[in-house]
Image (cartoon, rainbow, N blue to C red; front, side, top):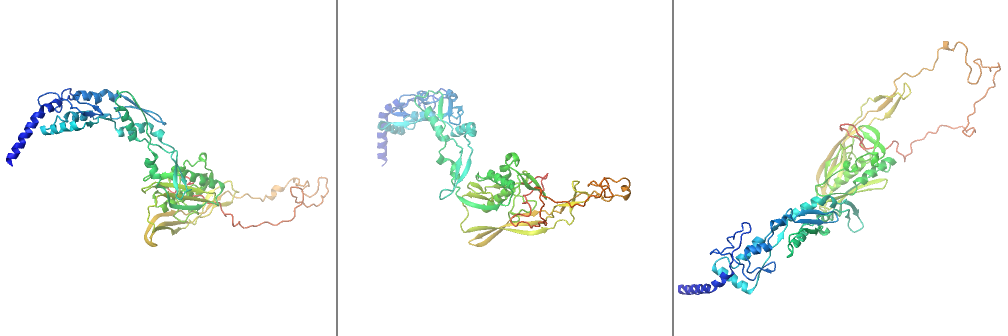
Length: 552
């Protein structure tokens, strides 16, 4: 066995001696690009610059016989290339930058080194194997200039982001088997990878000489747009609630519908928050609101936007049924009639507000519907709760707050002296709680207190003129002297100026057309059962706000 190994070693040594001249003919030193001197890989042991072996291709060009410096000059990128201008064109504007700002880089040095080493590197046996491979088939390598996708995305989005941001108005389409959200004025985004590939295609062409580059921005395909993909998940009604405003006056109806229209159509992506006040503000006549009753503390006043709290209240109850996160909710200062106790939500000057956060992992769509009598809010999204789970809500009155026994008097000189007038009846206050009950397969598994509310009591309010009443009786002494004529022209003794006694007459009551009306009795009626006995109470004002402001 030992003799056999010695024989094989001798045969191999003789083969290498024969092949050595051919192997040496492929060798050539390679010049280091940065220093201008041959690198260790490009210089042979005897100090000669290695030559790239034949049948090696870089970008389909045979580089056999070239030195490393020659190959680098052909495929590399010099420093001046980084200052070449790049223009991105789009319907939203153009962006100019440079290849350097786009992070231009090139792998020519690595590719050239690989080409030089092929057949010139390793032990004798490895070099012999490479030589035989080259005789059988070519070795193909690729040198390529690249840019940074992240740098391109940052630069283009930074310049065109505002222009590419659409109105992002959303509407709900219920025409199909499933509801879907339609995006109008959709925002667009750049497909940075495809746009970078277009740049690289140009700068890697064989005839590219380092000049300016112009490329059209490639927009993200709709099917790959993450925002649209998320919106497509909105297909289920997660919670809905309806209140009535049929008995409201025309001004309050207008305010309810105006505020509802400003909340309608909002889409909240996961983690996003909505403020009802920010949606509907400014609550002013200039923004489409009218004067209607509103609460300021325990006072009822006319204010722009009276009624908008019903919008917040209805949305609040829909959000509870969708089980969204309630960030802020405030109760009214006085009870309202359109929801049970503790199920209301007040709005007042940005101090009292209803704020919701989408705590789900899919977007939600808020829909408002109104018809002059009923207001509904619905929250659409992707149903996430098991089908055997249901929820219910209960409003519980937990206490009564009696109004003060003593009225509150206010001086009012416009009243007749010595008279008074009740301007507001006493109001009873209440405390209440709202509870949520969770059922699984019809069995209650959890009870959760949602909120506690306190509604103020208010004393009776009376306006009074404390001045003494005027006296009608005159002193008899004041009647002495010449008496004035009576209104009918007679003197105090009952005679006419010529001394005759006038004939007795009875005044005739006549209508505007001169006829004498028939005798009538006073018409005493009870309130119409179909008409509210009092004007509908508005929805409230802050109870602890820095300055009293109407809540609606």
